[in-house]
Amino acid sequence: MKHSLVSALTALALVASPLPAAAQSATVDLRILAINDFHGYLRASSGGIRITDPDDKTKKIMVPAGGAEHMATLVKQLSEGHKNKIFVAAGDLIGASPLLSAMFHDEPTIESLSMMGLALASVGNHEFDEGKDELKRMQNGGCHPVDKCQGPHPFLGAKFHYLAASTIETATGKTVFPPYEIREFDGIPVAFVGLTLKGTSGIISPTSAAGLEFRDEAETVNALVPELKARGIEAIVVLIHEGGYTTGDYNECPAISGAIVDIVKKFDRAVDLVISGHTHQPYVCEIDGRLVTSADKYGTLVTAIDVTLDTKTRDVISAKADNVLVRSNTLARDAEQTALIGSYDKLAAPIANRRAGSVTATLSRVPNEAGESALGDIVADAQLVATATPTNGGALIAFTNPGGLRADLAAKDDGAVTYADVFASQPFRNQLVTLTLPGSQIKVALEQQWLDPKRPRILQVSKGFSYAYDDSKPIGERVIADSMSLNGERIDPDKSYRVTVNNYLSTGGDGFAALKDGSAQQFGVYDADALYAYFQASSPISPTSLERIRHLNEVK
Picture (cartoon, rainbow, N blue to C red):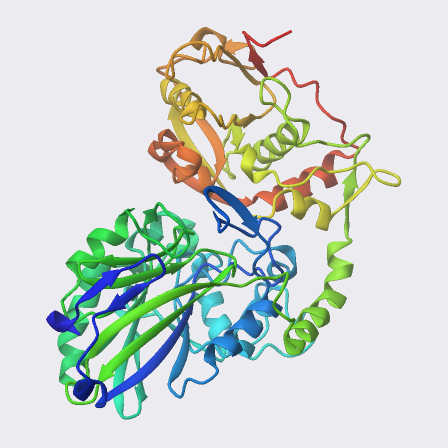
């Protein structure tokens, strides 16, 4: 493609300028299907996808979308009639997964995507959640080293190939997986380069990052170009687990910001097409004259990319894309996927039904006027207990984000709470991170609860910590400094405190940028596991009195 690609962004896709008929006759058509950030959602997420209402462009609607059974059907439909085709992904296929996949260390997801015909995938940061050795097991198969073989059949590993151009094992100086793979379509070779974001080491645990180096994205890709050229490759597709943030509908790109913009601009002109991910955004964009796509998250979309290759130059001469909804309410269920999911469901029940403990009354995630909830208090307490010892982090305070609380822990039957109940309340499988913050920075973090005044995100806090706020005051001045206390003592702005949050918050999630500045980070157990252990040790558990956060100007 290089300087010969001329494309224009439309509402639905990037459409290349038409070529003369003579040139078109000497071309090869290739359809690339792409996904990213599947995160083990074998079943459709309850949220679906938010899109512009086709009947009223001023409104947004939620559309049921996702699920492996429906995605498999759509992949087959989008492949029909295309002689040359390939199904690829841009990372985070596993990790932060729902219970059905997570409890089997994501083996069901690897099998599901292999069954769909996925061919190539870049690694993402979540692929490293359980370390490089576990990721290699995902590729190569075999039993889990601790939990052994739990599935309904031997785990044979992925039929697709992981690519990791920028992830280096420091002991050998070699990449964890091949940096690229070359596929031929009617005799024309196309290189697919796969890599994750260079910041991966900062958002996975130190244990998982040990012995690995994550290099600069653009420098890595550009260094491969001469090697690919020497092999006669002109058509280059990059699968990168890094992305951007955009406005507009799922097939639009009126504006895009974020890391992907600068990365694409730094790419060698030999790079023709970029399939991105990580930011959980849907878009079809043009950046620096090149097509850049992303397919949202959780399997709600499949990107259909139509590429035209020149038989003489063996290069890309046009590319256009369309993000297609995986409509779970209209697409038929693929029978093979249904059978696979069912086979794991049967085995999951005994694990999902393990008794964690009990409650005396429902722990609701619904907040009171001050923004505090009974479930939030218990989750924060569990995270504090899990990280309080010096060995586990030495935490004095724990905060958790309200968006991470997804389901009440209901008082049913005899009040029993199962592992499945616990996991449903905290399904994101975030690791706990204990970090050091001065008292002044804790106040800054609490002030960031109102970055969006119309939708404040009130952090849930652990036992012993309390404060008051007045949201009639200007943003940045709402938390009453003198009211911040720990076990009855005022928080000293100049004193350092060990604070536990989840890894989402520790990287600035939900706008809590102040937490990114925490030092001496120590990663711990997953949030759901901390809550499960707390139930085992402390049941029966009762709702708290909701007095940790005070809203000074609340309406009586």
